[in-house]
Length: 310
Image (cartoon, rainbow, N blue to C red; front, side, top):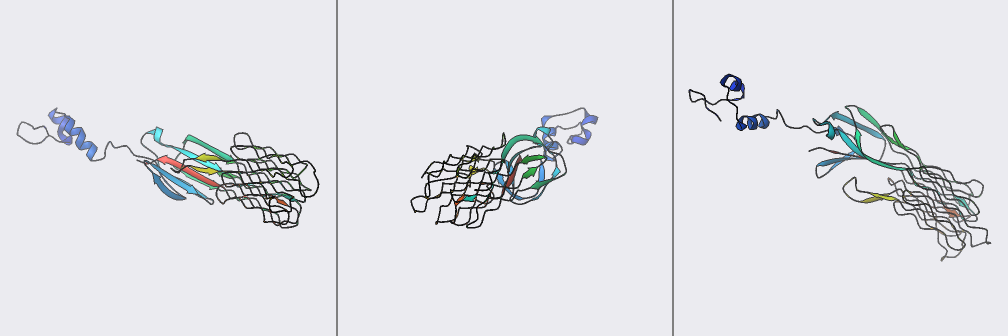
């Protein structure tokens, strides 16, 4: 510390009076926290850390509340991942379509303010009971700060075509797959042609990373693959499409594989049920063949928010 004429220490309070200023005075003031940078502070969801970042994971609807902004406006921003609920699979005697994955939206640099933001996590679409020929249910939308991901489209059945969604539902045999939403997902696959009992298949549900597979005789297709995100600090796939149902009545003619990212596998005639999409991935449910068993339901969505906290 600098000294005054009487040998006393010149502190921050008497710098102006003494006319003496040194780097040591700046250090004192920083130690007192007067010029230290503050960071964004928020509450809501399940909170974890990844290095200098906090991560809020919402697996059900809740509130993301910003209680304090960063000193530097450039740090008062968040990164988000919003995945909607996946669609349920369809059922028909010729092989039902896989459910489409929930819409997948992600971005960085979203500015926030000190307020409460409603977070909505979309539910998965319903499946179809055994021996019922019909379309599954579409997934619910997920929302954060006016950004909405669209629920996955339902897989098609014999009497009902597939529905468009974040990713579109796959068709039953003979039908065409439904469209996905631009920037959120891809279309569902077409069903196979009519080849006689035991050969037809549906189309795979669309995924965030790829369209659902096209049905072919004796070859049930997979759902479209999802996309990977490292927003939590760990690379994880979300929003895979549901696999198609098959009309095969032999064990070798299984249903279509679910798309990577939580999509459920399809079922087949007289065999296992279509598998439900994995919860909180937005995966589509697997389709099924007539009289097999139930189709898979869609997996619920998820919302994840990340920001710098130190």
